[in-house]
Amino acid sequence: MSEILVTENIQGVSMVRLMDDLDVEFDAYLWQNVDQLKEKIKNAKALIVRNQTQVNRELIDAAPDLKIIARAGAGLDNVDTQYAHEKGIVVCFTPDANSLSVAELAIGLMLSLLRKVPEARQDTLTGGWNRIKFTGAELHGKTLGLIGMGRIGTLTATRARAFGMNIIAADPYLSADAPHLKQMNGKLVSLDELLAQADVVSCHSPLTPDTRKMLTYRHFCLMKPTAFFINTSRGEVVDESGLTQALLEHKLAGAALDVRETEPPNQCPLNQMENVILTPHIAAFTLEAQERVVDSVCEDVRLVLSGKKAIHVFEP
Ligand code: MLT
Image (cartoon, rainbow, N blue to C red):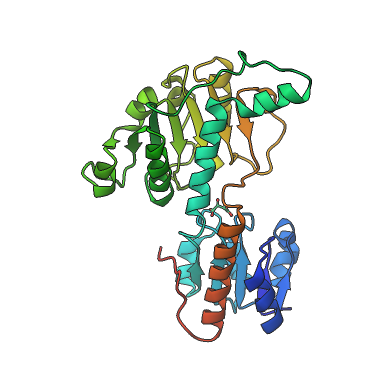
């Protein structure tokens, strides 16, 4: 039984150092076996997870000595932060470490969708040379609708502005005269207005009880038939069957999903659609972001275990 339990694949130089210096059990697949996890966490003082370990009441109750839960990532939807707080356990996360990488993937998916890169690649690999078929569209002059304009939404907007896109945003926490919105000539609109006006909709909303299945068939039907939907936030924000139905009925032109309702997802009609790009929740997976993420969680764990205050603490 180790002092520090790592239950998912979280690698990097700082993790190697942590393993050299302290008593760490690293098991990349432990999140899949809840019984074993509950057994191993009995004497742990620190738990390091990504988004797959369900750090719920049951698990927290199985860990009477736990001092810190360190989430290697930004989303805390898999951690019962309120209960951890009540139990006096520090919850740390890495809110800034991977924002840039997520924003860059959102832009990459935008370009891939509008220029039909995956379909063109597939066609070329099977002997095709169809230039007219793969005529795309420019980002320049198009309207980007951001659902959520926090850190990642803002970084995505800044990059989209460099491509000459216009920005509109729907965000209950944003005011119409927010300086960063004004600076990019952005406009705050309702969710329905955003869906009706945008050429590309990019979702950057955290998963909360209010945002779960926030985007349904009705919402996708509001989109222009030429518009694209991108999700790099959380899959559960979208009612995937509603999106699938809307795509089948050509209510929108296509979609790129890095996150899914169930991860890994089951076989579904989205897999067969040429105008849909599916990636395995890789938005935060760049060398740079992962180094920052791992540095951050390892530093916080060291601090807390040596009786000091952690740096990236989440306050519920
Ligand atoms: C995040 O929340 O930081 C990203 O979605 C990556 C992850 O969940 O590990």
